[in-house]
Length: 223
Image (cartoon, rainbow, N blue to C red; front, side, top):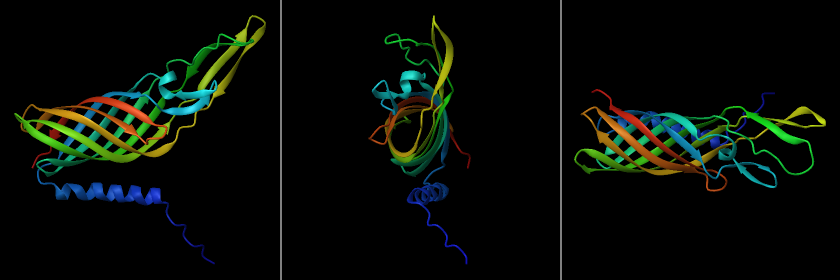
């Protein structure tokens, strides 16, 4: 007997639809697409990843703000409307875990942590105003999928009467759909080259809210 194929989840079907749409969009462009490469800083502001010390803790409590690197494709559909698929990688270096200095011994003496990583695949729309002497002011909003890979934290405990020992804090990241919204400004340097400045947030409006500020280069693809 041949087993029936399992139906694909709505999440997988939606991802396939987004990828298909990204592949079709360049053929609908009203002008030459632009490819952008950018880098910047991502600030995790209200991202509650786990509960410790009786309260929600945030990624930003223990890791430095991330350095990100991204690439996007700006596809003009009209003079005032663009569609922009993008992929972004965020790299968080560990800062410190809160030292525990009250309560009975042993005390927390040292903490170390692995790198945390966040990946974003977004499909965004840009509303463009090109009235600023060729430069481009735009509002951006979109929907996409975010994958978290949160590093483990190793704690060293001890006191004058107890040999040091270690424990590990395992922080479970998650994958989720998110909405993005922001504002940007593109400075035109030549017919094919520009500088792009953008600030926006990503959120699922429950337990994730990250803010990023990016500086990048936009290049118009040749005819």
